[in-house]
Length: 467
View 1 (cartoon, rainbow, N blue to C red):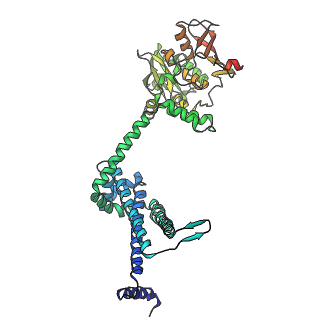
View 2 (view 1 turned 120 degrees about the horizontal axis):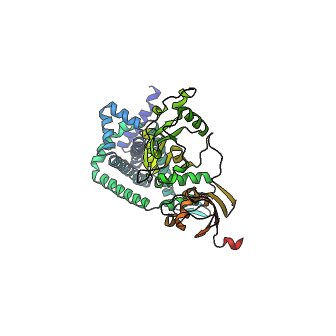
């Protein structure tokens, strides 16, 4: 007889001997029990792999399943999308976890009973350590079953499912649907409980202020680079910053009258080094559009005048209090990089560009045309020189103050010069000193229209004494 048939002969003789009473019932129970444990380990592996497979499906996989239009793919999509995506995935996850845990609990209980019925180990005496027979049996059960559950029921199935997720979801779609129907009340209870917990967490998150998150960033990692912290804080405050805080005021905007001669226009823009220039008629409050310098390139060598006004593109107008996250989305949708900022009366307040928005998060962006100029000078740790037009939120960043530090006294002002005029209720004269909390401002330069330069001194209590 062929040697390949010997294992089957041994199984046959074992079964025959058991029937005839030659083999003890404990051995038979052990064999059957081992087969049962292997079967349930297989079920555990299937449910574990289902979790990874379903929740690693990409949009491409979902499109593929939708186009396939087979019965199994239809069941997969129903499990994920019915009654909606959020509820469907919660119920699916509840079904998978419920079945996986039921199977694992059965394996633990059944294996414990099987060990006590078939195997019996004596006490273990290791000198200072003595373990009773019950303790030895318990440890063996825990170590062996935990190892099998983790290896065969979790690690291997999930690794396989990640690489073969479509195959697993099609295989397990109908069984999971049946399980979801059988255990429907429990699944709905679990999914509903998770929904309540999710709402509770969202409410807790909404109660956390931006200032608390900013402080958490400062405390999170003392070794983190200052630039990294600045970017994180910029992202946090991104949705709370309005256009007026980052725009370039009209007094600093380079613009051109629409009646300008073409040759004069070319000479002017060559000296400015800008890629986009606002065009106005009569006054800057009547902006007619934006001139893109690249549109002038075909005409740059012309010696005669040409109608450059036909090259003007329509301008986009935004209010001062528009949030910059909405403005960024507008720029992306309309594929533009500049907008005209208008006040509540329709007058032009200034301009805002894509670069201004990005600088609010990533800091100053320098290109080949930017002039290297200091926005402020630091004389020592307690003394600074600022331009009067420096934005208040920039001063807060430089001095490490909260972004709302000047909110109670600034009124409608957004610059340092505007703040000092708001406090003094007039245009301060040169040499005048203004004190605010722990800050002292000395006017270095001013005219009858605005404050040009300010010396700012920190006068924290306790610091002066140390000095």
